[in-house]
Length: 241
Image (cartoon, rainbow, N blue to C red):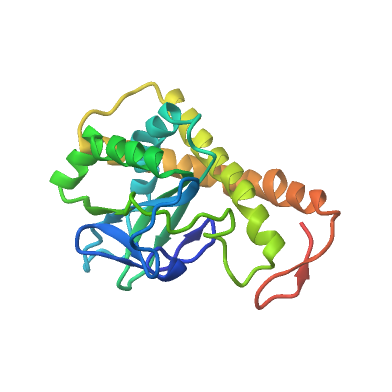
């Protein structure tokens, strides 16, 4: 099973970066230098996906987004210029991973990484084996300084620079739907087992919104914004929404 939300390259392949044994991302040709401006930073949450379980527990992405990332975004919203989520799950060397990707200075990145590391929910998820590890960049080196640095290099240069603003809006909408459903549920789960069950319900509600309303609310209005022109879908004919 493969999942791609906020389409982009995987963390390990992106920009010539590789995961190190220390749970960080290291990029070729960038060591020994720290820029003074902004750059892109990754926090990749690697989930345990047992071989005898067919489908990944995608509701855990929702749990991470709301319980761990959302408080960090609220705390550092003035310091983060751009951000987004990336979801993927496939039976390969990467497996099931949920990523929080943000654009800020190295100094801010260190604070944000520390805030993520200090999350009591994260520590519980690790202790119970739900999350295997969290991979973070070396916050002493800005490996991806450009706005377009994490966009798909196959896209046109103009789209590479514009896309991060689009996908931040999409990620914000997804997170806001999660927050609204969670707050409207009227209960606050305590244990990790209760949280996973709770966010399974929230995930189903958000997916239902996408299925029932996404065609008009998202696809149609996006198509309208671009002048109702047809779009080429891979392996399909041109379509309008």
